[in-house]
Length: 204
Length: 106
Image 1 (tube, rainbow over the protein chains, first blue to last red):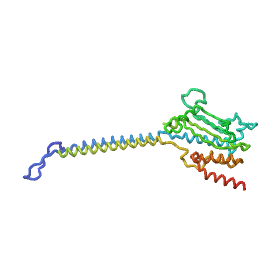
Image 2 (image 1 turned 120 degrees about the vertical axis):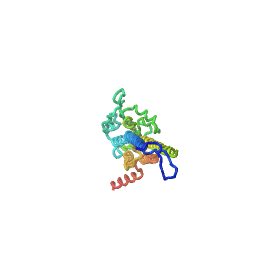
Image 3 (image 1 turned 90 degrees about the vertical axis):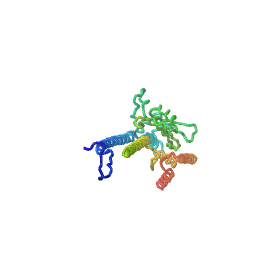
Image 4 (image 1 turned 60 degrees about the horizontal axis):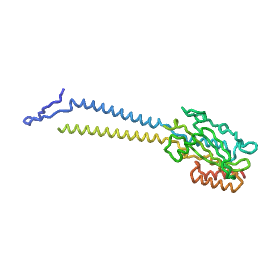
C-alpha cells in the first residue's frame, strides 16, 4: 500500500531525482466516500423538496365557493321563474305574494354544512345564505317582496369584502338579477344574493 | 502547492453547485406555494354557452306586451351585458331565442 509520503521517481540515470507528494492513491478512496455522502445528502434534499412542492400544491384545496354560489343562484332562479314566468306558488289566492313560500323546500336546497365550534341556533351556524328580492317594474316604490334562507350574519362579510380579492377567508358573495312576469304579465326585477362561507373546506 | 490549488478549486465548484441546487429548489418551492394559492375555480372566466339567469330575463322580455316596460328591460339587459354580468353570449342567445319563438309562432 502506498502511503501519503514523499515518493521518489527516478526518471533516468543521471537526471536529478524529482520528488513530490502523492495525494490521490490513498485519498481518492476517502474523497469518493465524501462525494458519495454528498450525493446522498443532495438526493435527500431534492427528494424532500419535491415532496414539499407536491404537498404544498395538492395540499391546498380548490376554492369553489363562487361556483357553488352561482349554482345556487341558477337553482333558485330556475325555481322562482320558468321560461320568464314566475312560479305560481309565489302567489296566494288573492294574487298577492305568498308569505309562506318556503324557499328551501320549494327549490330543493339542502343546507347541511354547519360552522364548527359556533354557539347559537342552527340557522346561525349555516354556511349558506340566500336572498331573493322582488321589485315591481311599474311601481318605483321599491322592494315588494323578499325571501331568504340560511345564515343572515354572513351578509356582513359581503360588505367588508366588496371589491377586494385579498379577503379570501371571508364568505363569497354573488349577486345577480333577472326579470320575470307574473300571470297578469306584470314585470318584476328579481335580485338574488347567494353567499357561501365554507372557509375551512376551501381555503388553507 | 499546485495540487492544493486544484483541490481548493474543485471544492469551490461543489460548493457553488450545491448553492445553485438549493437556490433552484427554493425558487421551485416558492413557485409551488404561489401556484397553490391560485387554485380557484372561477365561474365567471370558465367558458360556458348557457346562462340560466340571463335566459329567464330574455324569455320574459319576449313575453311582455307593454312596449315601455319591454324597452326598459332591454336597456337594463344591454347595460348588464356591457358590464359583463352575463356568463353567456347575450347577443347570440337573444337571436337564438328570438328565432325559436318566431319559428314556434309560425
